Length: 233
Ligand SMILES: Nc1ncnc2c1ncn2[C@@H]1O[C@H](COP(=O)(O)OP(=O)(O)OP(=O)(O)O)[C@@H](O)[C@H]1O
Image 1 (cartoon, helix red, strand yellow):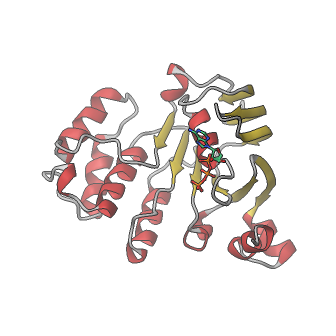
Image 2 (cartoon, helix red, strand yellow):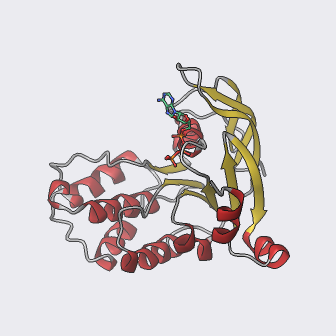
Image 3 (cartoon, protein in one colour):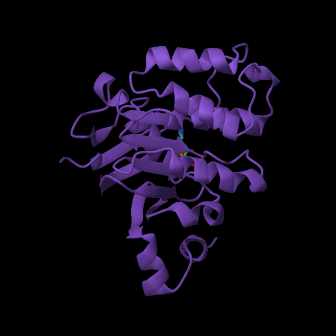
């Protein structure tokens, strides 16, 4: 089986000649939850946009299940962007039916189940929801697809700390174990218990790609402690 994600010599330079990613090489295997971690401006969102065909590499390649990002990869990648993109005038139940028409692998029952668990009224319109609740709705929709790769850009930034564990649990219980989840976040302490592996990005390059257990056993530290050490200002 091909790796779910492969980046080969991936470089992205924006028009202002900023090199957001430089010759990045990476292979991600299936069945893992991976934290994409790095300081502001390290290239996390750029990488995520390249995976989702929202940017074109300046050099190198992204391969998802062996394919370049495009129509076919969008069928197997479920993407949570950093900003709300849902129509504010729509009711949640209408968005659910829109998603179920649009994505073959959307599991409508799962979406309703998650909204109930999260105590979200499906008759509400998006614009009437708080920022954190909007995030919960979007995440529930993204996790309601039977995808092979989930790419979540800052999924819990706006969610209150009490609800974060619940949301993370929701992620864990709603995905197929052969799938891979790539999560970009600054909330390392909140998320590190669910991660199998972490990638540290620094100035557009991967400076660490390690299993969380290895970090704990070999270095005797939490991921958060290691991050603070590596990226101390
Ligand atoms: N549209 C753009 N045009 C020009 N430069 C950009 C653009 N988007 C990002 N950059 C630059 O690319 C670099 C990487 O940015 P990116 O948004 O990928 O980082 P990030 O790790 O996601 O940051 P943060 O944690 O702050 O969200 C930064 O130097 C940023 O200023």
